[in-house]
Image 1 (cartoon, helix red, strand yellow):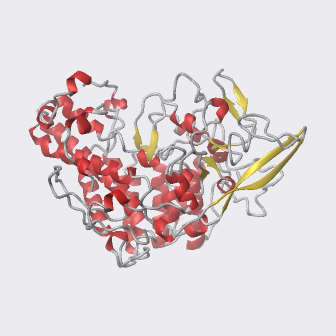
Image 2 (image 1 turned 90 degrees about the horizontal axis):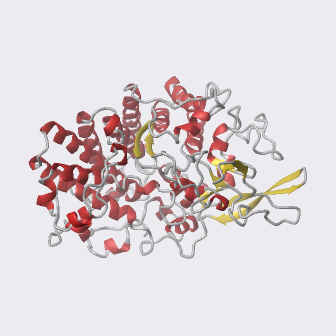
Image 3 (image 1 turned 30 degrees about the vertical axis):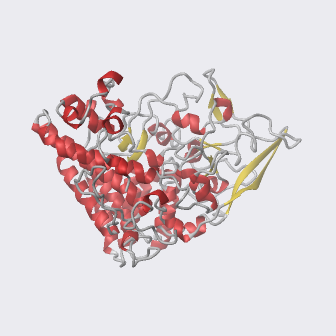
Length: 569
């Protein structure tokens, strides 16, 4: 375990203390004021205590960050996207090539959650004596317990079972527990913390509290953790069921029901809804959702001020972007037609000579292709020139093999009015849990437990309707297996680039099929009115069974023989 967990005022308090941007408060501790802070002075002051809690939010979205590994995030570590070229071998490239190992894997998934779990425990220890009214302290404590559950859930999906620290605050000289708890113990702990937080926190947070953890967020996190726990990788089908940290030793179908019930509980609150607008344009509500700071669909989000972070990561070089992943052709092909049929269906109307015509509206809102209109720093929208000329050479810095190795750029969640080279940014906040996920979580769990009953159809069709598909209804009388394929396909396109695909293919145990394959891109060649489309190889991905779970960083296992590494590492 990391010794950095010990309280050190400059490390744990002075750096980065801030209040949430959504609350509209500025930093109140400047450099000269922080030099003499310690636990006693911080928690004896109400404003500093509130700021300490706010500081625990800083890292909530680290796992989903688009440039988490410097040249891409989880999207560039799976079959969604190709990493940006890098002078160093990054974790994203290591996962893509199957060369990841304990000595070089990113340690952020271990360090950041445990650092923040310790902060929560410090807060809970001192909060009863802080000069804050008791009714506010109670909400703050519940908020902190949710955040602790959130960070444990991050640890759980990366590593499986990890050491649970309870409420303890360890010092440098203490022996910190390093024995890993079982997967079951970790799930039970997270669920109990979510239940406790949900019982105290307001169902939704509004006005100056918007963006803080809510009862709805605690309920949604519970539903997600239970869904993962019921999935094949952990529900008795782990890489080594006899090793308790890697999953349950037995397969219990009832775990699907627990997940379905938890998701249904969120749905039954009627506190959330899909952001739908198919009048402005088919699927426009899907695009607009991600530009709205306040919307009916976000359950938990990383709050931010004006920002261009996704534009900088994903827009083309001509807009001063291209720092992250580039969508693969396989991801583009996952989007069906506007009539709701997959492009592999002979009756879908798909035309390989005109591959982007009449597609699922979410495709255009998720992927920048050749000639996509995109705003420039002049304020004008101009087409992105990704094509090759008659001589086979790129016509701009944005062209395939020049700006993009796949022929595509990511458009998901980008603000159509913001370019990476603008001086101002979007009010967008990155979604961490939203209602569409809850609907798909429910549909998956209910289908696995009870089959494709009407409630499953209803949940999936709500997502497809908002997407602008016409017709959005699914074929009648689908089998359980057919509905499973539909749900998997919907998750892939609806939740793309939000940090889900990397985990989904693992918990479904389909990564050997989705990752052990040649990834491809698209060359568009233009010669006057003549346009040709050619698929070309980009990178061969490789997957090993060990990669179902992350390796615990070697620097951690070297500190204690009690901290057992995951299988096959």
